[in-house]
Structure formats: C-alpha cells, structure tokens
Length: 247
Image (cartoon, rainbow, N blue to C red; front, top):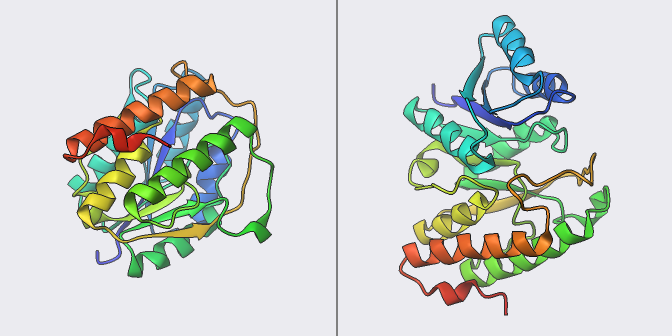
C-alpha cells in the first residue's frame, strides 16, 4: 500500500499503438495498476481495451461516451486515483511517443519531488526527431513565460509524461478540459509551493502531422487559446492576467 502506483493513460483513437503501449507499461511497472481513460474513441480502441482488461485485472477502463478533451481525460483519471488513495500517479500518452521503460526513473525521482515532468529538451545529447516548427516555437514561448512566472527552471512546458505524488495531486483544482491543462498544473503547483523536477526523455514524433482536435491546428488559434487559459488561471490565483503576456 505504501508504494501503490497508478498509471493513467488518456486515449482517443489510438488503435495502432494501444496494445504495444499498454504491454510496455505493464512490463515496465508490473506491480502498478493502469487506468485507461477512453475519451470517446470511435475506432477499434474500445474493443481492444475490453479484450486487454478481460485478460489483466490490473488494467481498468474509464469511458467517456463522447470526446470531452485531453484535459478532461486526465482530470477524470486524477480524480479516480485520488478517490482510491494511490500514492503515486504517472501519466503517459498512448501514441507511442513516450517510453514506458522510463516510468521507474520517474517514480524514483518522486522521492525528492511532488511532480516529475519529462523534458524533450533538457538533454541535447539525447537528440531525437525534429519537432514540427510551430510546436517548437509555441513550446519555447510558453516555457520561457512559465519560467519567468513561476521560477521553475523548466525546459519543456508540454510533455505529457509526468509523475505526481498522490497527496500533491489531491491539492490541485483542475477544470480545463482541453490541451491547455498543463498551464493550470504549472500555475497551481507554483502557488502551492510544490517541488518540481524535470527528467530528460527522448523526442519522438512518429506522426509530425498529427492533428490537434477542437479547431486548434492553426498555431495562432492555439496561442490565443493557451493565453486565455493562462490568463484565467492567473486571475483565479489573484494575480493580474496581464502577466500572461509573453513580452
């Protein structure tokens, strides 16, 4: 019970990679439980998940009847974990762009942190696939702004590969259903005084043309959306929304 761990896997239409990712997760942390949050998949993912869960009682499935958003999938996974008293919670995406073999290193780093966040830019020696230019530009802008706001020495604002202490996760009040959820995490972690560390991870872009759902494929639309999330979170913290300016 002391080291009870849950791996939360948000999922939306990942039929080609689902089996392999879950198999690698189970191999990396065989004692952990796994919760897959199916965010309204319309491909064969639900059938594949049902088959996997029938054969492995440590794999649970939480299903959204409709697509509610990446952030909402994580929020519901976090609530599930907190309600059941998990001590450590890992988030890893299901598109094979994260390496489940790194999960034990993330869990070990929680000994001295409340949140451990993957970074594709922390160790240049790792190299990896070239990121799409618009994603790299927005990541750099957002990361620099968050460094200025929070003082955290971040190098990658958007990596979805993270580990959380359960008690720290229980203190967050997250409600952003879209891709902007990490902005809430960073601002709230800062305001709560949580300890944050980054670990280097490989930069993998198996599908550089991958879409952002919800009309966010256009980089400028995405920037405006991220800024609105950040402004709202700063206002909720009693700070000036003007601090969200990247200038």
